[in-house]
Length: 405
Image 1 (cartoon, rainbow, N blue to C red):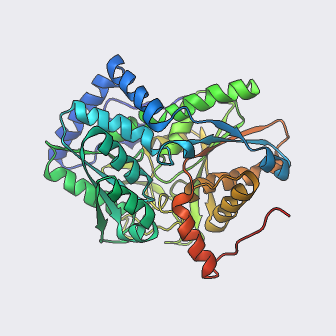
Image 2 (cartoon, rainbow, N blue to C red):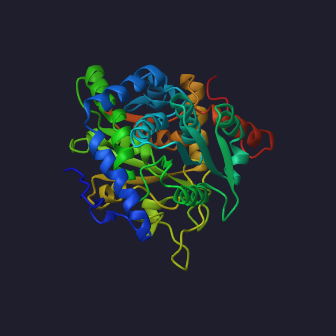
Image 3 (cartoon, rainbow, N blue to C red):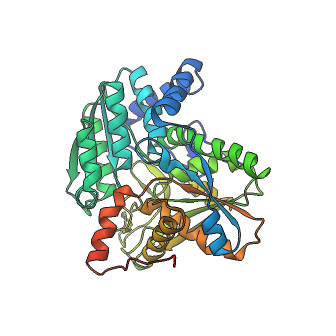
């Protein structure tokens, strides 16, 4: 089994270009450029040079010996995307897209960001490549991710706070798209997740697929066989599709995406799109979507700023319909518990986004035989979340546990 993207940008029933007519030729020009360069030896040589020498790839596949022993079941491995330069998987995609932008003759980069990691990666790569950069970020996310906002500004980017709606990732995307369409000749919109109109889901998948290729090679070297599970968090779905990409054809490997259950599964308290949503169109593509009573994008919530998005990448929707991947959810509390568990058992502070995937791995590992293998995509490091967690502890919303001793 595999997933395929048609020439007009559909993964099964999902994807496409649901955009105003004047936008179609802009997207098609991007699609043509991507097809021209995606297998071009010179482009790929430059792409991999920066992956290796700017970002620091390949990232390790790390065996969590202490955590595995504590849980008493399957072996847990982490694909350490947190060890990329800038602390997340996002830079894989920003390097690829900005190299593409330069070949297209673009002068300015704009992007959206939720948790800020895509914004930081975009700002840093734009600085490297000598490109002007503007980042759109929901005003709520600006407040809870102040450190990343300052990092973007340090790197020379302008950060624009989206003030409409819920002031989170959806609104940041809305405003970034609007700015792009005002000057498409000079501006390149660097979309950070595997969402949006074609060709963006395909582009992001391609540039993030390095994660799964490395993980497959590394687990074969470490264990001599494929894992039983590949687990990743899902908001828009870029880190998950990056890990899954090289394993989709290996049907012995269970693919599991973990969405945010937030405060609970009532309306507005979660962002569990694939678990609780239905097909719908937003931001120019058709996919599973959480809707309000009028059929518009629902209000969503997650403790992690990178997961509060009411839709999801179209390839994930196809994987769900094919029953090739399973999509589950983890609550804020489960994510925070996993955040502290990994910190205190392995000395690794994970991003709150990644902590959702880790929470599910911790949920299933004790039920598995000890010869089973779970690979978790640790998509980012938790430095950006420490201030948020410290504030919650100081306000008595959560307790700082002592797991050892």
